[in-house]
Image (cartoon, rainbow, N blue to C red; front, side):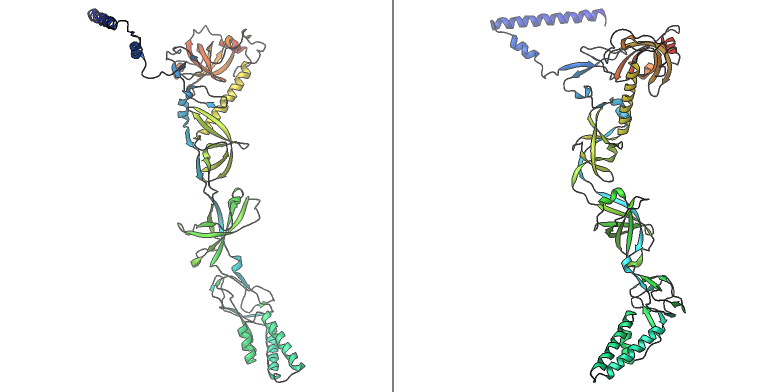
Length: 544
């Protein structure tokens, strides 16, 4: 701006001010004593009530506040904090405070705790087995010989009443003759009376009972009683429609009483025996529906009913057998086939739930992180109940609607534990009495948290990715520290630029969190200056 323009603006401003004063004076004279205070108050009254200013905070998130505006060592203005801005207030003792930038880097994601019905499906592997109640063995009850086979292969389907084999037995022939003679005697003594007729009837009844005990059919007995002719062989028939699962009979072989010659299974209904894990067995109830999938028939689902939960546990696999009854139309399901079983579990109603990923389970207790504000998290111990595939019931510790961390909660937990560990270690080391050969601590009390401290030393190492620097520094009088080597965090990545191991520097630093020391300014020193190296050489705590 040139001098002429500045002079012109000044003249205009003077004229406006003079005119305004004349108008106000005239107005006041016309009013004859009327006060101008209400008008002035109305003109200066703010349209909106101003918020109460609390303090100014450090723009880098350091615990350094000021009652008046100021700049940090890097020239950045402090940020005003007004009443009601809770997110800017320090975290309480039971909370974890993480910067917004770090929250974004960690990928923290939250979700509200909700009321929902927990529908769970218990999955188990199983196998097809024949229904034990539909299996039959054909075993003659007398000694004899296999005369002829009508069904001579295993696996052959048979119908109910279909002939299986014929046998010859001298005992059977004798029993038939005995019954035939006794039956004819009863018929001939029909008109007679007395003990002779009663004795003959008792003999006929005992012979008939003997034949029935040998599984002679009613039809054969009637034919024998009618004709009186004994048959040399007897035919055994299938008691049920099914599949021959076992055949021991060979034509011409001799068999003994009770020897199983055939076994027939009715496979129109089969069992699926599923092995359910121990932790899920309490959810499985008899009478519930089940879905069965077979690898041989992809895309096809069979439905059955849980009929029995076995009372035994397999100690090797920690599973309990569960029996599912299943219809088998078309005999698609073969015994010994593998099956995948889904057992839906009924829910008890709506309960407060959180995603399973929100729970940090240490074994001794379960923790959930609750978001209390921007960058503030409160760990809570919870009591858990039923589980579904993706959610878990919370009995105690979380209320409906509270925001829980469902992603990166392990990273938050790890960082908070790391800070606590570093803080505890740091305080133990910094508070230790100097040993022989160390520099004595400066007199006075350590500075309060958030105060700025200075130190000089030699750069031992730099981790640009983590934004940290390892410094072999001399004694720090404001903290009563002896000379040592320790790690600092840089408030800004630009502070590390140009630094190399071995460089002599003077730093200014603050304590942001317990045990977390942050450099806010770095100044290079001449190579001949710097107290870090000699002190560190005599310091037995080097490497802290």
